[in-house]
Each structure stands twice: as structure tokens, then as C-alpha cells.
Image (cartoon, rainbow, N blue to C red; front, side, top):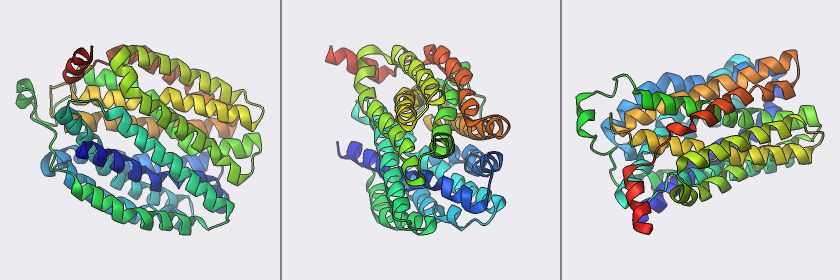
Length: 388
């Protein structure tokens, strides 16, 4: 139980710093005089950084272990987290976010590999709950960002303050973890290296998570802008849209482990997929802030369990080391973050942000159809049978 609490606390604290950035995006956009398409291009920096470093992060995590990967990732991430506030044009904003993406890739990969190892070690399902704490941290961070905005604290000071507050507990939690590894791969996995081609099952999981990641990235980057520019909410209140989204994701993930054990991952993922599409429709048809925030909450609840279920399924395939499979899955997830926000921005530049957000619907439909590719871990089956 000590290890379970440690990894859940790490998921919580890691996301606070990032969550405090999202409500301040409209202010940085306004300060730099960026249009929707220009902002979309600048926001590409974070996923580009992740995509550049993630292919190497899987091998790093497998080589040095999850604990050292998390510790080093925290040092780098919290050092560069305030950099977007120092940008003076689109290029420097892109570069700042790219550096954050490079730091985040190893950190979040190490966190997911550690959660999977602890899940197997403790013989209890915790992945969705871990991501629930991550979403709770996003919500807390966004509330901190909204509070700083309401107090007219400059963006740079607010981001630096949050990083300084969380750095010591983050490093202490990471160092307190045991020296976890990704676990011994299955016999057939020993014949394959971490760089072998992914299996058809893993590709299916990657495509499943792609649309969900697009949607999470869209909510993070565009929810505050949508409420400010389309709905007309004040800047400080506009940040509450992402808070509603993050709160709903956290609630869904805290429920995710128990309902998945009871009903299985496939029906839960399909129901959540339908909720994501309902949420998008509610947002793009909203005439005021209440409906838009309700739509964001429904969207968040629908997105909640998709990525945790996919991480557990990918780590449990047994064809390659868990870190290698989770790295490939994370690469596709970040691909969703890479594609979604700029796609929405380009559509918004030539039409309207409502139409931009509506472009998420086909990808969410595909994710819902591919939910059949999820399958429970063997350890989870045994645990469910024991409970029965």
C-alpha cells in the first residue's frame, strides 16, 4: 500500500504545474498578438518535443528503471515549466513548449511504467485511479492558474511559483519509490528487442487512444479560448472551463478501476466514447457559458478511462517489454495532441472555433469502434474471480 500511495501522489503532483499553465494561454496569446492558427502552431511545440524524445525514453526507462526516470524527469520538467511566459514571439513560445515536451516525455513514461509494475506487484487494479489523481492535479493546477489570473499576477511569476512549491515534494516522492523495473517480459518477448515492430494488437490500441488524446489536447489548449472568444466569458472565468473538464476526468478515473473490474473494459470504453461525442455536440451548440461548461464536463467524463485502460492493455500484451509498448502507445497519444490543436486552430482561422471543435467527432467515433481491442490483464481476471 505504501508504493500505491507513492505513485498516486506522484501522478497528482506532476500535473499541478502543467495544469496551472492552461488557463493562462489566452493571456499569452493576447500578449503576443497571435491569431488562432498562429497559436495552434506555437502550441505544437509541446507535442513535438515529446515526439522527438519519446522514442528514446522507452529505452531509457527500461535501462535505468522507473524511479530514476521519474526523478530526473521532475528535475528537467520543473526547471523549464515557467519558460512559456518568457516568450516574445511565436518561435520562442514554440521552443519553450518543445523543451517542456522533451522533459515531460520521460517523466510521464516512467510514471506509467511504475504504475503498471506496482499494479502487478500488489495484484490490484490502480492505473485508472493513478490517472484520476493526475487529472485532480490538473484541476487543482488550473484553479491555481485561474486564481493568479484573477489577482492579475503575471504569468511568469505564477508558473515559477507553482514550480518552486512542488519541486521538493516531487523529488522526495520520486526518491521514495522502490527500484521498480518494467517486469520480466514473457518468454516470446525475450526474442524481440524494444525496437521491434509493434504487433497488430498494439497498433489497434494506439489508434483507439489517438482520438481520445486529440480531445484531451483540444480541451487543454482551446477550452479557455472558446469560452473567452466565442461565448464571451471574462478571461479569469474562461479558465474554469478546463477546470470543469479536469474535474470530470478525475471523477471518471476514480470510478474507473472498480467499474472496469465489474463490467469489463470494452463496454465501459464504448459508453465513455458515446459520452465524448455528446459532450462535443453540447459544446459546439452552446449559447452561453453554463451549457459550454456542462459540455466540457461531459466530454471530460467520457475521456476519463480511455488512456488508463489502453496503458494497462499495452503493458500487459507480453510481446515486448512493458516500457517499450507503453512508449509506442504514448507516442501515438502525443500524436493525437500533435494533430488535434492545430487542426482545430486552422479550421477556426477560416471558419469558426465551433466548427474546429466539431472536427473531433470522426476521431472519437473511430475510438469508440476500436474499443473492442481492449482486453483485461490476466492478473485483473484473477482478482475479479477472487472477488466473485
